[in-house]
Structure formats: structure tokens, C-alpha cells
Length: 272
Image 1 (cartoon, rainbow, N blue to C red):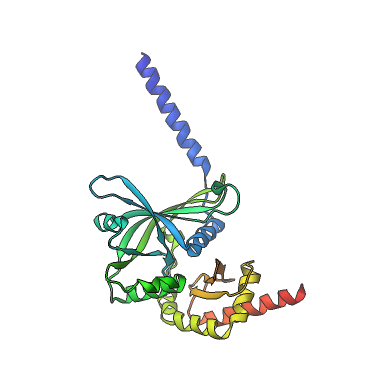
Image 2: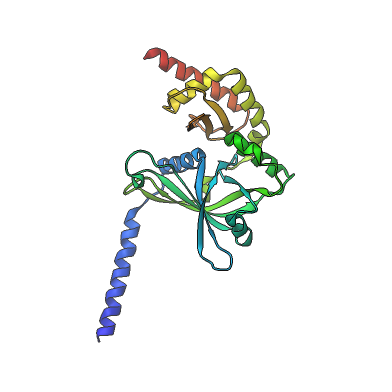
């Protein structure tokens, strides 16, 4: 009789816990998706969790991070690293990003992406694009990116857990995290020339983007990446993610949007 009562109490407890978890997870909305994309696009590094071969134990380490043009994380790792051998043996992994600010680190947003690691073949178009974008974000990696024991992996996100701070938990799927459509490949083909042009000839406009749209301080800002949703800026000490007023549907719209944003930012500055 006691065993039946204990089992019933356990079922009630599990049911109550399940209901509590449902209440804790909020409905994924546009604000949550934007926060998730901001955390991923703004990451300079992250914690990579892998499965240790032989033992099956979890193994976590810090890696440098960039993003592919559709938003998938990119990592550049040495074949000598334990985590590289682990993802070659079992591509299942998770990546945690989100830098803590002042005060309680648990009060700041972070996101964990449950992913599968895909090693990009050196010499392929995918590798060339990934290397270009990784170096734009992490220029110091030029010292070792060409070494034979370094490889670029694209982390294909399957789902994600977003913690936006206390009481702000969300579940996201792949479609929430990545940008698709013909515009992705179109923009990839012209992205570097647009970056070079902006960084060489329009540093004043980039400063406007950083200060007005990104609420960022300091000087020395450059653009490190364009994508259909927005752009990534970097200064010597910071990263700034800026979303376009509307997503691009074609690569040719980039120039028009950048001009509009520069006008808007300058007008706002003059009005203050």
C-alpha cells in the first residue's frame, strides 16, 4: 500500500514539475528572436561543449566565434585540441554565448545552441566564405588560419535555449535562428566589396550607425559583416550588432538601406 502511495506521489510531483516548466518557458516572439540573433552575431567567443570520446563525459572549452552569413556559428580550431577530436568523433555539441556585464552574471542574457559540427572542406566555396567572415571578425587569426592543423567548423543549430535574464526563458528552433532565401547567396557574393567600400570611404557613416542605432560609444568603428537582417560593427574593444529597419529581400537593397540609415542618424544628431 505504501509503495502505491509513494508511486502516486512521485507521479504528482513529476506532473507538477512539468507544469511549472511550461509556465517558466515563455512563448517565442519577435523580441526573443532578435535577442537570440543579437547574442549570436555579437559573440567574440563562446563555450563549446562536446562529448569526450571513450568516456562519453561532457567536455567544455572556450573557442573564438564568428557567424556565417545566414547566422550559423563558425569556429576555427586546431586538430591538436581535445574538443576538435571530440566533434570529429561525434558532431553533437552545444555552444554557449552571451557576455556577462556588470553585477550578477546570471542576470545577463545568454543562449545555448544545440548543434552538429560540420567540418568545412579547405578549398571549397563554403570554406572560403567562412574563412573570410571569420577573419573579418577575428583578424588576429590570420596568424594561424592557414596552418595545416587548423580547421573551420560550421555549427549547424538544431534548436536553442535562450535565457534573457531572470524569468525570461525561451525555446527556439532552427528557423528562428537562421536566415534563408536567395538573398543569402546574393549578399555573400557582394559582401566583401561592400565592406571594403564602407570601411575605406564611409567611416563617418559607420560612426553614425554605431552611435545612433547601436547606442555605442567610442571611435574606430568598422563594419565586419553584412547579412539580410543587419550588420556587425567592431571597434578595438567592442562589438555592436545593428538591425536594418527592414530585412533585405535582395542584395541590391543594401546600399539604399545604408544611405537611409545614415540620413536618419545624422538628422537625429542634428536635432539634439
